[in-house]
Length: 313
Image (cartoon, rainbow, N blue to C red):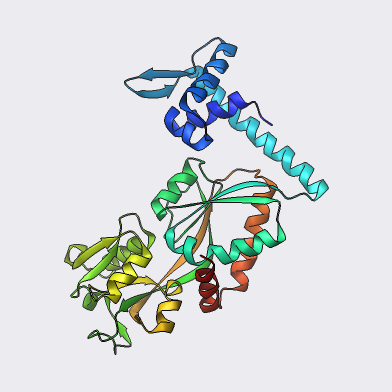
């Protein structure tokens, strides 16, 4: 409902990039430039300084951006107020999730949510934890679900459920009969590692530092960005790895991998992360409420939850 020119300007100002704004808005860059120029003509002043392929807000641009923030907040408040009266829950929500969450937790949760709220359209973006937090910071997504701690105090972080990390080895590996293993003992073996920015990797490194271990001593044989690729590499005997137990249901049932507990255990939260806006669209509020209840109901049901999710993905 808000002035399209203002929406386009707000996106460019938030990202400080015409190119990124065009991608996010699904517009061509000339169309984005045209909308911003129209707004500049309306105010009869420049809103951006353009130098050396970079842009920055002018003083007038900063003032317009601040006002635009308040305008969009009022629109959200109005939208929520009317929808509360009518009971209507609809709209488009853009979610972001780190790989483990997107592949093994969200499919079942979002499937149940869509059954109850068919008028809500959900778009999902998948990246590692650092990427998702960055998208939330830049308002590129409405809600993120991540698998590592978030240190940005300007964002709201809500734990939804706990996850356990375990060591995985192929059948026949020398560690296969161990009931548990320490990180200190594990680093002696060739290791298949997640990419930088991965929540799993960050949590593992944090625990190594807590135990006084040098991360440079980790015998990294391969660094892979896909959970399935890591499991395949371990199954092929190329090394061992650490993954979420929730991602291993199929392999453990088939016997193609063996999971070994870490000692001390490494548990981490899956968390919702979003901006601190006072007013959000009603569909967002409904999804958050549904997700909180869903996670509470399934907090002691990790095996069946992960199995349902992997079968959907």
